[in-house]
Image (cartoon, rainbow, N blue to C red; front, side, top):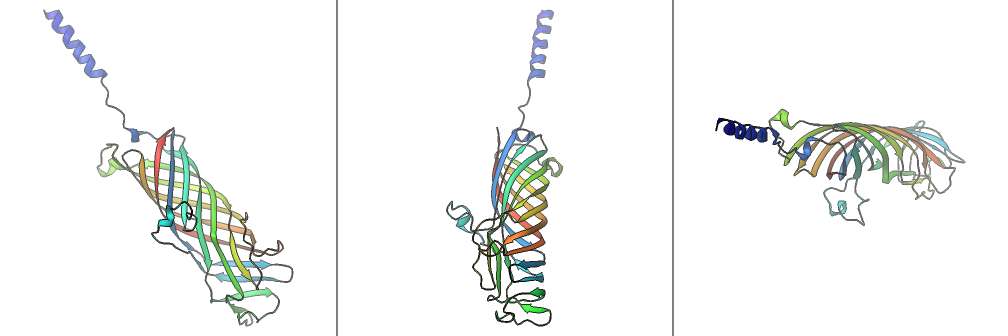
Length: 275
């Protein structure tokens, strides 16, 4: 009887020890694929823009620019009009629990501020005939003289290497697979493929996408994952853009160049799934 009782107790204890708690889906990221879509607002530093063609060569200094926001709009989810707002698309893969590699497009919009008085140097034909009112070293950015926009858009196509860390436990939230808070940081680099809307000195604009230069960026963000597979992500992203080959007219000789800093505020929605 004693032997039988010992065997039953031993078997019960062994079964208790071998029963494991199911691992949470959100406990590990390695092998997962994610994708997101969202919108942004942008700010740009002042920049010097150099214009050069057959009969002109001049530079505008400290030119200001702004973005062109759409606001909360159905176009963000309308397949036929998704490229009209300022958007962010990204897809990536986790190579381990913390690090992922991704590719994406930040569709920004850059609009030069019109009617500003700026410094300039160089020469161009028909000086003073475009309502620009030139003085010794200043002129006005009148629409007859120059319209300069990357509005379809300032497309930053780039790769990012990012880190993600679950901070839920540090703020007293258990890992339930229903709600998780992560922080993310990353570095990126890629090309600029703008479609520049420019009417310079009454020339027809060049309405084609063109690889114009490169960009570098860094970001930090907060990710909230709900019900294992879905998330909302807010990011602050800044970087440097250098475009030394901007098409300004249908004549391939007409070019512009500029470099500037940018800062984005991004909100995106996405999903994360194991492959």
